[in-house]
Image (tube, rainbow, N blue to C red; front, side, top):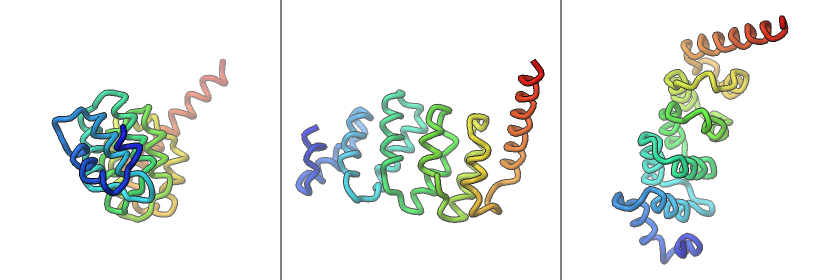
Length: 169
């Protein structure tokens, strides 16, 4: 905690060691990563790898929440955004609002394509807001996969059917 509260240059080596030490608990590594990410710095490659590792591991809810909060607050390069887009399907329904915050604006066709393909793989596609997805992809409509378009149309139809059933009661 002391290192995190005083992230001066003299602590960078120690923080990097803590963040990359796989023998340490994930939360300790995340705290070190957060300290390294303060200010106007871009998330490092190793930090992003740690976040993706946490998403893959289905880690403890507190650890996942900390990792996702760090992702939403970090500056990501174009390449890192694409890497993260590729694993968007690993976000749970509770984490989807954070995912949508990270990708509130798509910055390239490649990023849009990666994000779209990951959404197709998401088992929680029904948790996504169809209109929000369409809005996000508006700058790159050709990057929206046909399979995702079909899934969104099915969701729209299901919502319409539910609305009709509710109105009929």
